[in-house]
Amino acid sequence: MDIISHLTRTVSPAVLGDDHSPAKESLLEQFYAIFAARLADHDTYGRFANENIARDDQGFYDRVWTEGAHRDQISRELAGKHNVDATAARGLIAMAAPLAFHEIKSLAGTTPVPQFLSDNLASYQHHIPAWASTVLPAGMLAATPAAGTRISDTTSTAPLQHTEEEKGSFMKALLPIIGLIILGALAWALLRGCQENPEPVATPVASEQQAAGDEQVAGDEQVAVAADVEPASLRIATGENNELYACRMNAGDETLQSKVMNALTAAFGDEANKCRADVDDNFATDMPAAAQLASILPIVKNVPNASMVIKGDTITVNAPDEAALQQLVTDLQAAAPAMTVQAEGPLDLQGEIDDSLTAADAAMTNLGDNPDPRDVARALSIQVINFELDKAIIPDANKALLDRAATIINEVPDMELMIIGHTDSQASDDYNIELSQERADAVKEYLVAQGVDASKLSTKGMGESEPVADNSTEQGRFRNRRIEFVVNDEINVANEGMIISNDALDPDLNPLDSNNDDLLPDGDDVTQGSAIDPAN
Image 1 (cartoon, rainbow, N blue to C red):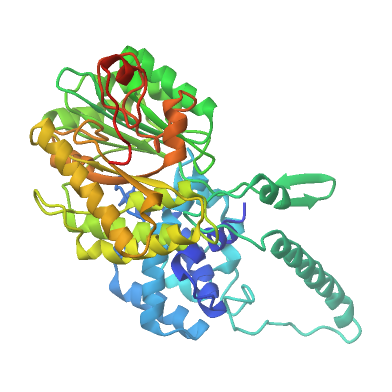
Image 2 (cartoon, one colour; image 1 turned 180 degrees about the vertical axis):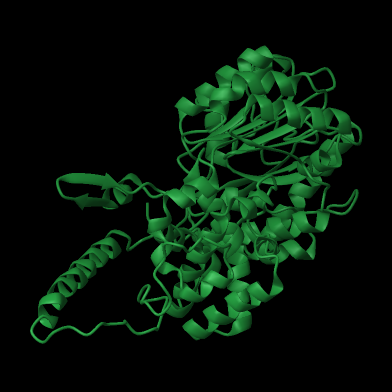
């Protein structure tokens, strides 16, 4: 596995954006190799193995290299080698570190990251410069070429060291080297030809036609290059009586969806039907914890007002009682020893807002031309619109992102979105419905003021009826207060019973019950003799 090529193809576009500077691309390529060698050290990785690292956590780089002198040396050496401003180099490194960390964890799968990187050392070792031995743990470069040897065309300017040869034997010795150089150049040209349209982090998955074009031919075998996808995930919360209070799932195919739903049904019975699933090839088709769900879910169910998020190889949990929370972490770690189990940290409100805006901005940047409306809706839903208490005024922090959204919505002819407001449970149902509707309307009004055709947008206030987390903790209430964007066509399909989609957000899976809380009219509305206008 060529780890450096993978990171260059996925992380670098997210870091550099529209800046296609070859110097900065080469700088990042070399940093990835140094970074991978650092993570291959068990002690280094162990310091933050149980942390929930945000993708825009620029302080993460400082925690990987705790010595300030080492951080300064890395940025100084890389800046000097690649003719990049030292301050700019430090910024690029800080942005790249958390993204590269997540990509490496995704590549490692269930294999411990240090072991994975040690097993694949040969794929990145030749990118590591000799000077990096001073910023890496002792023994990490034991097998790398010695100082003064040319490590790669992009990572060292030291001349090749030649020994004297007898006259006549020099050309004989040189011929194999020339042959290797020619073969290497041909291989590189082939690889670049197969990667003319790399997909950066957070971009939509390639179409089947594009994927077919990404096949590499090696001898008589065809090796398909897998598209980069987000990890599959499951988020649940329990209620006061241990019932399933909230449930969301992201899955890459219906096979994984069915596997998770079967486990939920075994643990929660018919309550599992309230789980919303976004099934899309943007997500992975496997979940490392899927095989352990039969053991994991009953543990969470037994803790009232608990929440759990499974994403990749990490399980993050919370509960209002500290003793119950710590026991939950212990029990889950025993049930799923291959997973990283951690308690959710205290709510950092401003950090969450800033992180969400950064992530949403990156997702918007990577949408490309003529984007899929589903991907636009997902990107917009990442942001936190932190309305003031009891108010529906758009914060200034969100306006730049919404301005970008207005441009995109106008440029895509068939894009029709519904804006949905949600609240926590700290008020009456009627008040929360009204407030969530006002906030959804405020977002629509702002977009219309920026030139969006009003007919492309509809709104709905759901109040507290569609939680994604518990309402017993500060973190859970924060996540429940949100604005979501969905595609109108998906809502129609969901109401016809054809799919259950996270983007649909229709809380009424049973059209014959007595709850008149669906987004579009169905059987229970007919029964009650009323209908809800989706364009409210």
